[in-house]
Amino acid sequence: DVKVTQSSRYLVKRTGEKVFLECVQDMDHENMFWYRQDPGLGLRLIYFSYDVKMKEKGDIPEGYSVSREKKERFSLILESASTNQTSMYLCASSPPLLSGYTFGSGTRLTVV
Amino acid sequence: GNSVTQMEGPVTLSEEAFLTINCTYTATGYPSLFWYVQYPGEGLQLLLKATKADDKGSNKGFEATYRKETTSFHLEKGSVQVSDSAVYFCALSDRSGGYNKLIFGAGTRLAVHP
Image (cartoon, rainbow over all chains, first blue to last red; front, side, top):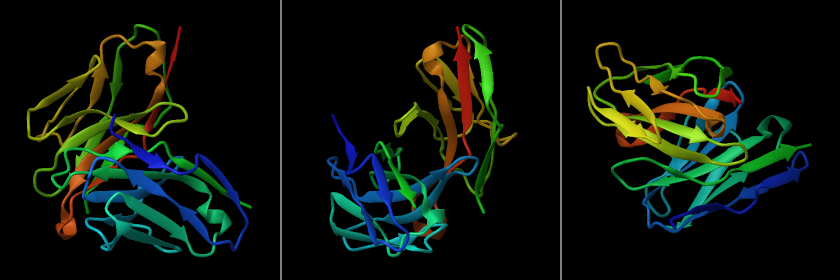
């Protein structure tokens, strides 16, 4: 069964910490995406990647960075966590022609 | 830019009722349209999709028709079950900037009661 795996379901971090969210896919997909999900706002794109070592900013990249050193792994980094980054984070992958995304189960991050 | 607008929820129905969740979009060109479903505590799953005007996507009793004249992709089901309780997201494919990605609506929560 093909899968997108996010390393943690729940995380609690302190303000100012550097936070790493990991995402791994086993479908050999070129494209990978990070979204955050907030009530009433739907899903907003943070960053995406179309190839190893390649990244593009989405709609809300401020306060985040990403890393894609291997095709199967796409990491989201919060350089200095803040309370307004408390959210559900969803990773997704897709083949190049975008027949649809496969999503991970999400990481609910709380910054205190 | 491209965008998706969904009806606000929550939508509360009794079991076996008819469901409609409205979705309209703004886009240049000819996007593909999608419905995703998110069950409690899970990520999103693709429910159905349509790639061109007048296409009908269907899955698990749900249907949606790509209406270019009204820029709509409304989700329907003839008889809902308690197990359909979830959040439903409408999305379109966006190719601006030369990259393929999805733009999502805000989501509509559906609660079905026995």
